[in-house]
Length: 382
Image 1 (cartoon, helix red, strand yellow):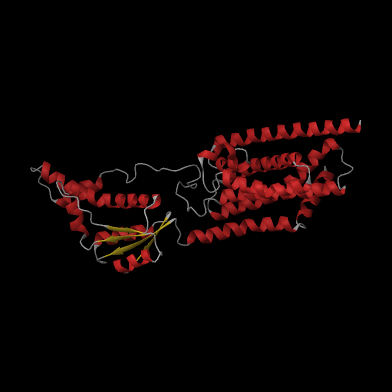
Image 2 (cartoon, helix red, strand yellow):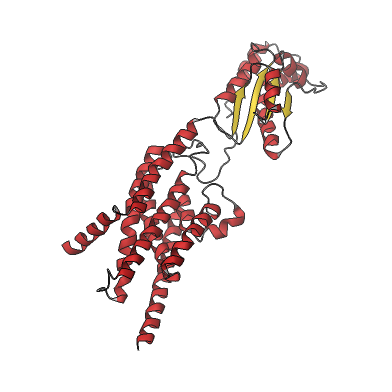
């Protein structure tokens, strides 16, 4: 027992003499650290500058402060005046500006009253019309709904229930104390929410997928190391039928090292689920990565050809797996690669089962291909 353990320890120690392995290992905390810093900065797919005609107007001030305090795909900033906001849009510094009038309370009351002419009262200026900006206007409408609903409620009560002897303040107390959640729905996909159910920053959301690809990359690098050793005769004394176990050990040792660093990175980044859940997912993913790399090695036995396929596989996993985007059109192709199962397994017990099934399929293909190659070699020798 001591001899195999000593051999595994020597294999592990030898990895740290490989510059490429050390670079991949160091890249993991650096990647998490860099994305963590970026997530703290102002960012967004759409930039909107907010302006008030009257900075002391209570309703517009409440709305502006609410927008500025949010962390979302929309980057909100504030301009000192409407003129400055319009100039920023013209110069390309922002995609749009929302300008709130000075008399918001009166404007809201006029708009929400029964039988009013529904005159628009917020000025929206955009550089161009696109889908993202249309969606932002939906957000603006939703934010204004609360203020309009209160006015409409009072107006409806006064118009339809004239015998109601309550002040506006008393009516609004009833309105405010009704136990209805502000949001009826929370819409998202697997992985959009962290362990506490809160929406995660979109910049750090891809961390799990990026780390999953780095683990695969490390496994492929370890496979190259094994193929170099095999070419140089390091394992010449090992029987052909046992080479698969030697190669599996060489690759798995490297993947385990990277998986350990990945677990630590996930915990420190704050996007991890329960520790036990992460540990189970990484153990299953480690086995899948090992089997995947060995299967690719059996298909591309030439060292240069195998090395040439690595960028292709990395790009394919980044595109087809749900690392940055979860596209239904490419879902089938994404399930050919291990990261898809690992990313989803962290949030779904069903995908843990799929990881096991995927591992079983990879192992069956690997053993079958290995047996075919051994038979071909035996016939040639015979």
